[in-house]
Image (cartoon, rainbow, N blue to C red; front, side, top):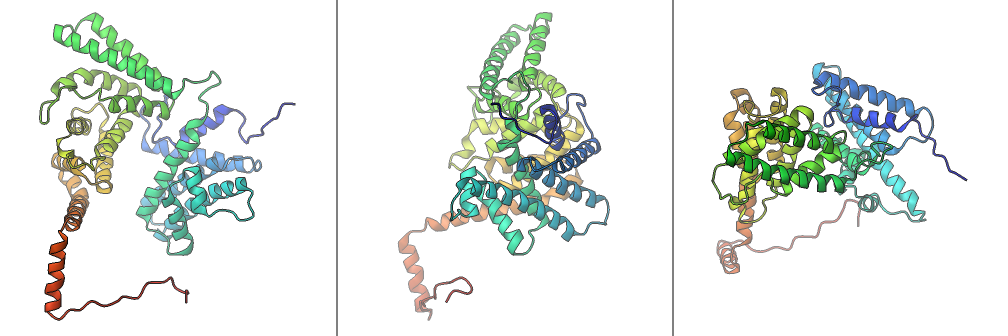
Length: 423
């Protein structure tokens, strides 16, 4: 006998519409290629209210859906507070904390229920089992048993929670009843199309045929195929961008450190501009992927990595309002995102990128970010100093001890620390 699942929504399309509205800052509607911030806020408010109505219909609302709505509601509460003084800082922290704690607790309770054990595992163990970052559990514990975390930390944690919910729940929803193309198929097709375009574009540029009718038709055909590959799904867009960046398709294969990127710009600019016009989420996704890639520079030879230098040059191009394929508002938002990324992920290439962005920005932008930027550079310097200390020869350390003892200092035993209340 067939088993039926009762859902609060009438059709799968209703759930997908709510998903699109809740994540309206990341997923742009095909009907509104360039939505304003206000229209995006209205869409999210409508989606939150709709989810709350679904909750009144019974207990079949997935916790992921409810948690997403609560987290977005907290963001809207904070956003509205910036325009008026009616919401106190404590109320903003309280709303963020309540939404975040309910999100973490609910998922951990689901994991405990599946264990069916008389001695259920701790929340931290459950979080590891379901792939939830341990930092979420730690922040939930802090908000519950200690002082409420600062607003800045809660804002970052809420954004990370929404990204995690997208990854584990929303991105796995079927796009349509026609069985949407698998992500691996998108990757494979994207790789084939982009490599073919690169070869054809190189040949056309060498032969001086880039202005011909045939070349224009090939460009339009490639743009149409790429648009279809990543249309309607942020996951597909991320897969498309991953291929573009991870396969080094935007970087000349024989490029040397410090060499020009004008050839690569000439090869890809027209296609990227056309795709950005059709898919406004392309540029933010591409910038985020490139920032994440250049941040992975823990190796000693990071400064000689030609691929990361090339990505930095691409980022500077994308973040220049005069030549970027994105709109002025998009570029300004991405500039702030790039500076915020550097402050959270200081490194060799992110520092170089931040210096260039500050140098190209106006006085207001410099005043807004210079202090945080300089403080992040100090963190990098301190980390390097710590590494240098760890490399001091043992004989040198022993000499320092002898010198201290000669001046009257003596070693003393320090009692072991124990938690409060432990005898």
